[in-house]
Figure 1 (spheres, chains in turn cyan, purple):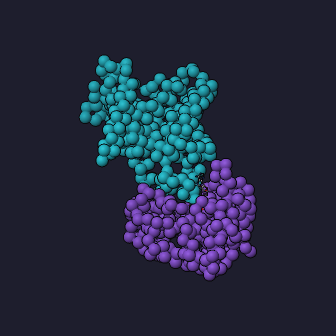
Figure 2: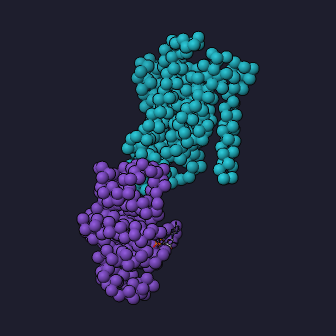
Figure 3: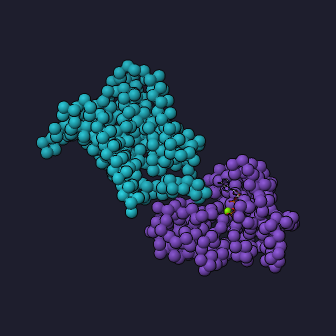
Length: 284
Length: 232
Ligand SMILES: Nc1ncnc2c1ncn2[C@@H]1O[C@H](COP(=O)(O)OP(=O)(O)OP(=O)(O)O)[C@@H](O)[C@H]1O
Ligand SMILES: [Mg+2]
């Protein structure tokens, strides 16, 4: 069972990468990005296709990441241009429309034939406390931790980070001070797109490599982000990892066929918890 | 002229709120913009800085037309707008608020308002109203503007704080800045202004020396009531 839990950690790391990006986008731009998974899947399929045609893996990965950066940035540009003052519901709905567009485009460009899935990280592993931890898991976990820490530090310590936080609180006041709002917004969306591609590429060898299925990775990531109520980066990291762990453990139990739905319970628990807290706040 | 406005019309929703206003703001002095509640003063400033679009008319900033330019572009061109209601970034510290628009170090801001330096690591949302007003003024100045739009700085502040703010504005103008000052307390604004504009129901009903309004309070009253025709 421990080995099963460990297997879940790879998924958990990928969920955590996506969850941290979801929190970043929610906090800085007030949007729930349902298209984040598909944004990464698109770049991943660009990578698959290039690799299938004999392109070197490094180049394929690089161009795949670039594709997702572009697709993420494009959505960010549309948000900054046309939906800057729209409320959360409208902005989030726009991402759903974008998700549908990406799914359609993905099927159209890449078809439904299965593609060979290259492994980004070698097959080896290390022995830890009698368990064999694959390199891929280590790399994914490391990246997830690095991302959560890096994003938090970036927002605290850099000029652009201060700009982003100012923008999140009072976009108009930030603009009046000459903050390059459009460029920053596009930058955040593009960055999230690139990270999403990385997450999908890392997890793809363990999943059925279908465009639609992989695009739904955004849902367990949403559940992970919800653990920190879309506010906290460390909690999003923990939430993403936790959901992966639970899935892993469940796969060794009789409930295995339903394990993908377990994060629904996590979501429900987080939501109930948040309600309880609000009731508590209101009571004071 | 630093700022020049010609035939400006601005609407909120359907209704035109600023209805054909022309004036100019020269460098090195304070121009007071007065008028009763709802006259359209805030609406006018918002159109100047690009928060609201202009329906008609022209806005010239140092000889360049900017009425279609973005807010960021106008800020970069040297226009600063200190909004009504003290728009601090509440969860950012005093220091971080100042950094947002700063073109150099923060010393200048702390020189003007030493109390901000003492509270540099405090979230701006926790400051008093007076400190928040000092913060937004200092924050705007760090962007090295050449035209400064100030909207109702004194609202709800203690007289002592208000006097300090006014003295600061006066000194800034003496140092070369073009200031357009919107104030509820007419005598405060007129005390440091050279020219005065009075708005009523979206139109300018007085435009002339500030001293004239100070010397003849009746004139100001007439202007507020909209019974005065625009002077030269
Ligand atoms: N958000 C809004 N939507 C629609 N109408 C508005 C809005 N804000 C203000 N108005 C209307 O526009 C007119 C001008 O308002 P504005 O705030 O520009 O006046 P003001 O001279 O700044 O007044 P005050 O001295 O109260 O600040 C008023 O009649 C007001 O009712
Ligand atoms: Mg006003």
